[in-house]
Image (cartoon, rainbow, N blue to C red; front, side, top):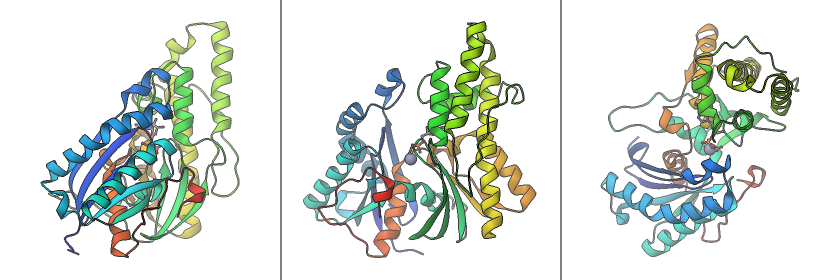
Length: 343
Ligand code: KG4
Ligand code: ZN
């Protein structure tokens, strides 16, 4: 469908400042400024994130428009992340969107960050259409802050059918990485180290959680105790076993994630299965979903790597669908930190 609608997307919910321009669902540009400032603290420091967003947002938006070859007066709507996320970070993107909206008389559309991750499967590239799932599909959404199975019936109709009752999968990986003295964020490093290790060397506790829900705090504790006891006997234990520890840990996380996804697919009779969120960049998880998909006749949708972690293209596409439905925001739209309070 060609509507020739130009959407400027702005994402600032955590530690990446990002802007993207879409013509309908076709990506014209995408710019991401990641914040290195948090690495030395082993986690995102909200105060520093807000300040870095403040420094980055004008050049990032400016570059996205220039790279797309679009002047601001050609933009039909500004899509911005209203939440969930860090309040101070969201405030920067939200306020910037409002300023741009007032100054140029352009309507605004607010986007739920998690809807963005899910709808990232509908972004196309200028030289090729990407594969799109058919509705209804299931999306396993795995990020630093969320672990959910979402049943997606339409762009504006989705239901969380399973969620974590404690830590998110990415959060658990990042925390275990920290214990191994790996830099933040640990997920990508565990991914890399795991490739050189043996997944069967260590066994970690798998949770028993009702229905389609998840839990990762028991696994994290089991990992911590294994390390604590082993290091007491051999101070070099972590260094000597890093690859096997990463492989075994990751294997357990992937098992936990995929077990419930299989259950959900059976329960709803849905075989279009999509992955989304930062952890969907993980090679072991991607390989496992492909393998299960082949075995179970699923159609699997793995996002391009650039659409896995936080980006504004996904915010722009989610904004595009809202714009088509006429769901515009008003100038009093304030950021929302928690998912439960979102639209
Ligand atoms: O979606 P995202 O960029 O931000 C949130 O909304 O949370 O996800 C960030 C999370 C972090 O926990 C990071 O460690 C994890 O995604 N991550 C990975 C990989 N790349 C990013 N985890 C495992 N393997 C990866 N390759
Ligand atoms: Zn995210």
